Structure formats: C-alpha cells, structure tokens
Length: 217
Image (cartoon, rainbow, N blue to C red; front, side):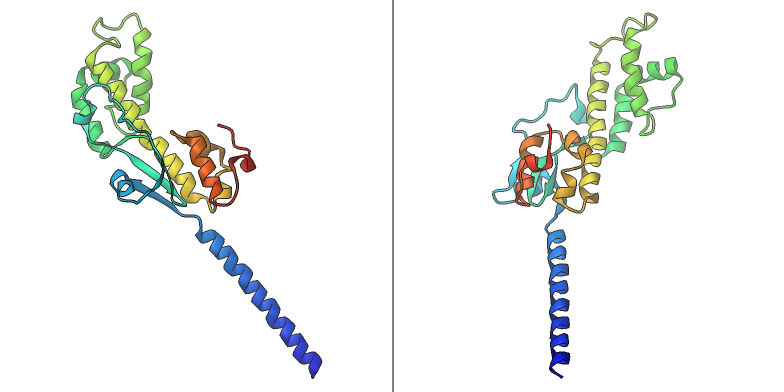
C-alpha cells in the first residue's frame, strides 16, 4: 500500500514538473512582443526606448504634394526603432506622380515600350529612367537636372521604402523569439537606422548581448 502511495506521489510530482515546464515555455513565448507604431503612438509613450533620427528627411522636389509621408516604427519587446519614411496612400501617390511627371514617364514608356506606370512595373521605370540618361538618342531636355526627373527619382526612393519596411516587419512577425529573430541575416541587414544599437538593446531583453548572436553590422 505504501509503495502504491509512493508511486502515485512520484507520478503527481512529474506531472507538476511537466506542467511548470510548459508554463515556462509559454511565458517565454509571450515575452516576444511585436508591434508597428505610428509617430503619434510613439510620442504618446512615456520614456520609450527609441532609436530614431532627429531631423526630418529632405524630399526631392514637391513630394509632399504627391502624398503625405509618414514615419513608422517597429517595436519589439518595447524597444523601438524607426523604419524608413513611406507614403501613407501608395496608390494615390502613384496616380499623382503619373500626372506630375507626365513628360518624363511618357518618354520612358515610349522608348522602352512599357505599360503605364503601376505598382507592378514601377521598379522597371526606376531602372530605365537612369539607363536612358546614357542614350545618345535621348532628347536634350531629358537630363538629371530636369525638374520632373528629380521629382520622379525622389518619388521612387520613398515609394520603395514601403517594400523594405514590409520585409523587416514580416520577418519580425514571423519569428517566435528574439533569439530566432537576431539570427535572421535579412532582418539585420535591412534595418535602416541605428541597427547596431537597436539589436544590442533587443538582445538585452533576453539577457544576452549582440556578440552572443555573432551579429555583424
């Protein structure tokens, strides 16, 4: 009878230990928090751990008339890093730049037999607008000093930022832990600002340092 009681006691102890282990793992998983924040959300926080530029970026031409440009921020375990500036309404921005830079875009479209500028071919337009500068047969007005050329080049730089930001955000959201995230080479390489300081602070949230992850910047 005593042996039976002893076996039952050991059984309950093992179950309790397993349960505690599961709870610990769940606790560890829940400590990994990812959020995308607006500038207003960041400013509303009290003493945020923030890595961000201090000066507004200067935009080529009149891009703010094309569409509003916003700052977005990635927060991981309450450590926040500023991502790249991007248009708030990308589709609206594409329509606006198509009208604002009609001469440049029409010339590129004609020479390279392209469809009208869209989200599907903007990267082709970005490449060919620079390639065409080296063509002897281009019209004299087509040059890097042209107002439309400068505005379009600035537009593509900002428009492309959304793709880079989405890549960083997707990697962070699909990781299960800080440890996993900081071993993702693509994540570290695409981070735009203060990547070294941000990753170091992020590693500290799991009681490690950037050196523990062999990070190179």
